[in-house]
Image (tube, rainbow, N blue to C red; front, side, top):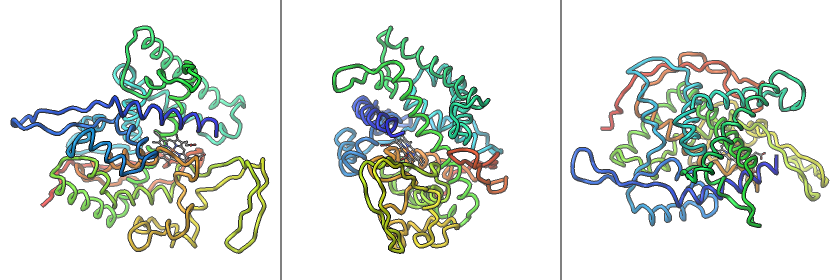
Length: 414
Ligand code: HEM
């Protein structure tokens, strides 16, 4: 896991820089008049921002964007509006399935590229669905090589996905055609000694990227929705925040718009506390160290051992989180900040230390983009009971269908 994660992080950081440089920004003529609209930032460049944010911090990221785009720009996030345009005036949907589809489209745009998005999206979507469905069962994780039907299916679909991506990589290489996506950047990457990435490495990395970023975000956005739609006071607060921001930004969705969604941010953060998609993580001990419990008991942890941090348990510690079973986004708000008050590693939904999730900002961004759009454009109601957790998966997810009814609306902002 650690090797995988290192490769993954290096690759992501590298490709993010290249994407940022190559990110297409356009100035669009105003359809109604002669004025020009500000440059649009696309989904690919949002991944690029992630790298700057992680390596240089928020200020540097904003400065970079200012240098590049000027003080006014808009965000065009991989056809989100087009996606929801296919919903009718009103109706019912399985929210979990819709978000799964949408997040795959976002990943398709940012990671896999236009061949998949334009020609074989449904096929890749189904294969990836089967890969996660079969590969994330507890039985597959505990007995990865056992001759179980789920393991066989996992291996078959993995081979089919590899074949599809191999074909794309070969066709790009032989035609000399390049694209603006993460796959291309993995193909073009070189190691320190000048060696190029192999086909197998590129395919392995792109599938790993999908695994780390897509499924976790689908689950986090589904839980966030289920909680918002079951808690009228938080739903009202989140909608009110949208109204205020739309008014403040006169409808232009730039970065400030998403960074100022504190209420929605806390609602997502709390959903992740109560339902962490990664319920535990492990670390290999490289040198002996001592830990002291709250009660003062000391333990020596010897080198060579593997330690496990159970996020699922830590997120419910009552001396850190008041009434930990209650969904209460305000616990992270001004004056309380229970995660900060509790100490450095009190909140570990994105892990901590050297191998903390580098996709955290990107994950929040894409979930906020989706949920702010839904809150602004639809009245939503949860039709099925609040979902139970499917503990049969290593990334525990909402069990069964999460049916939501919707009705289009235009948010009154006065
Ligand atoms: C809500 C969504 C997400 C959650 C809850 C989440 C959670 C985590 C956790 C807990 C880890 C640490 C695992 C460990 O220590 O064993 C991790 C690692 C990682 N995540 Fe995420 N993640 C999310 C989304 C993403 C996204 C969108 C990306 C990128 C597109 C991403 C990329 C990574 C990478 C590269 C690592 C490995 C970091 C390293 O080991 O240095 N994650 N994630």
